[in-house]
Length: 329
Image (cartoon, rainbow, N blue to C red; front, top):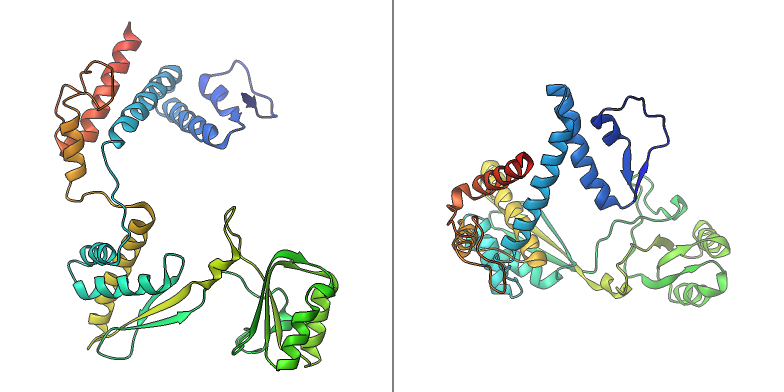
């Protein structure tokens, strides 16, 4: 249900003023409401009148557009990219046919997985290189600056630490005491990654660190989707170092690597469509007949094979013409 802003709306009200005073609780519905509000405001600013007509027309165009979009999109079959060979093919095409770039990106994704981190940076040799590091990189830092081991670099760096993972909040010392004792006896650092650490548990970790009794750091765990396990921390990190004989060559290759990596990530996550306008061509041919499974008679849009190059323009013209005709009746 729409609800008015808590403010006084001047009267007599114009349609543009009324439109601006309406918000919807649902964020997606409110997004569409803002679309109509923009139409009314721009019409009022440019023409000074006709906001009601513009609002009705915009609503009709949007509604019919969504209907046609929903019907046409079903004709564009997404192809899933799963195998290493398919990943290499996508990366190669995005790198302007450079199979070396495609194979290296495919190799990196195979090693670290979809959840892993792949970084592209300039190397110091002639040849391209790839380095794989087991583990995972995530956007979280230490909870307290008292855990810092390198003051100048403002970072914590450990070698071969014990790692305690917990999906719960740690508030009492007893919850982590066995891990603290095990790390102290083995003289190895301890990394605690938990939903949260506070109270006496955090105080004990800081005190042990300041006294030099134990190298420890506490990190707040990154958020995971519902049902996901903390075991996703078992991914990996791949660094592709780009080589070349000159700075210009390295820069050009880096651009190709970046484009190929971005395209490949999107393809693995969402799938791919046939390129070169093939999807639009198939969609335009399918419009010549009813959509499979539909019981509706052919419409004017279906009866016309729309050239792929002008598909969106012709579709918009058809919708607008139809809506204007309905409004004039």
